[in-house]
Length: 268
Image 1 (cartoon, rainbow, N blue to C red):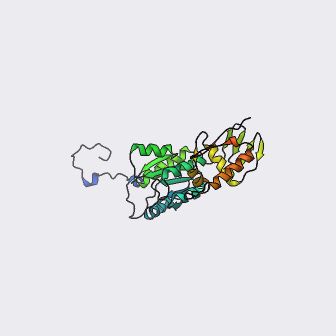
Image 2 (cartoon, rainbow, N blue to C red; image 1 turned 90 degrees about the vertical axis):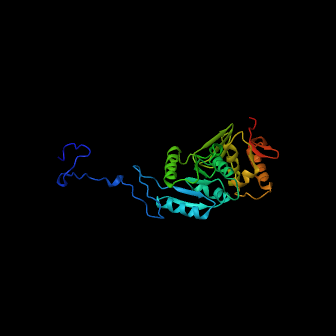
Image 3 (cartoon, rainbow, N blue to C red; image 1 turned 45 degrees about the vertical axis):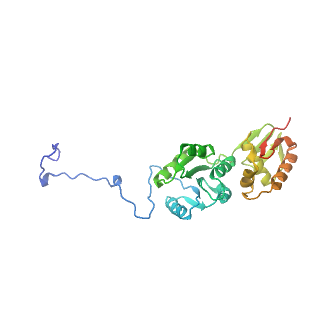
């Protein structure tokens, strides 16, 4: 009888019952309270350096524990100022847009101006326009709070599949006779190496990364000097003046009065 079809409702004698093998891997086993679920995949998930920019300490600590349990090296900052300082050492930035000191979209734009690091923006704002603004600011994905940890991990996996690690480190920007090698941190004019300081290089790279775009003084101060509070413009003006002199023409950096600077083009 074990090999025959049994119609619904037919009585089966105890000795005729067939015990089917179970499949433990398909069972939904609840996770112990207070512990992050261990997520398994057909592919081994590489360990990432994740920077969590989260204003709430309790939420940040819970998220850090879960990420570390997945094997990631996660660190947290609670302000935009700190995020601008720490992001270069990360593979992915989980950026909350409601930071206490600087608008999160401004932080996202600042990071994206000089880096191809993966960015997932997080916000309680669920309107379509909020998502659009986040993506336009340079985010690779937009996640609405509250979200599930499994969804977060799936989005991290999807984002990391799309990006090319190290793209910025290997990038070479050519603009007329001006060539900027981000990997070697070298500047050339007409094939000749131009000696610049570290901050001068960072400033020039920031402008060259967004040709045709005016970069505000506030963004320059926050991105290059990690200073979001200073109202002094002397530091920027000094470095711009030095760069113009070293590049051989003031036309390479254009001043937009009352706003900031943008990359120009010097005559041949």
